[in-house]
Length: 379
Image (cartoon, rainbow, N blue to C red; front, side, top):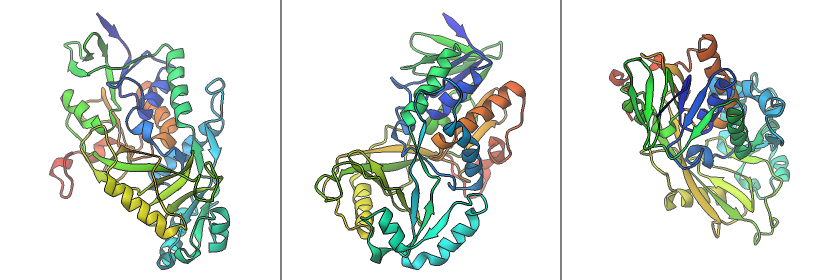
């Protein structure tokens, strides 16, 4: 038996659920997920932070447009706060003073609360830092921790409250019917809708290929993280009340995470779409970088994981259609999926329900003919 909807969303990560939430306020929506539960891959393995000065102006704009939603969500959306103040330090190594000045010059107008602090001020906030390893830091008072599980569950609850449906364990096969509907056939069910939204994450090009749509330049990249326990270090028995710490050269970050610290080498290693697993070399690299900056040895790892972030050549997301206006891309968030989800979900809904145009810098049409362009590789 076939169930008809106005929109079908393939992928129940944060992108798919946020789009479904806003669309379901005015339309009948189905979210179709091949895993047993939503957010199993990238969305379930996120660092869960909100950073205003993130990646590039486009991603920053989408994040800033989402900020009010996080701080004051709609009535009855959530019973608990979606974000908590965390703060952030971006460490400046002795040879990076000019780079830090350029960074501030680039971002200060957009993020005026960024400020330089001294080495002593940085160590006062994060006592584990080595004074000899840094020459001050850039402090971001607006960096926040996102309750990612709460956010995803609230989007999903809103979808269901609005009459939308979630179907998991669905091995998707996409076809086009003679009536120009997209039809998704699973093992024991069939769904149809005039518009399909491709929120497949690392599998976005697989979804497109299955639907007969040309691929776009999306590269899945592995990101590794692990947690160390501070119980035997002299820095407490639980996660400390420190801000998140990042390096200016983007080769390490760490932040409080029970029962201690979450550490990542900020790796972006191209990888096939898969259930990503951490590699020992990446963990060793991160531990070494951490020990060069901090007076603390990584003697044991409490837990470890890896996820795939999907990145486009210009590190901007794909939001909209290419040749077929009824096949809509929602992919390539590059690690910013959570912090941009309210504005991106609203953007998709405004485009599909009200005919509003998407900004050119996220429009997938910017990659028209990319297969023949120098320096771009199909993934």
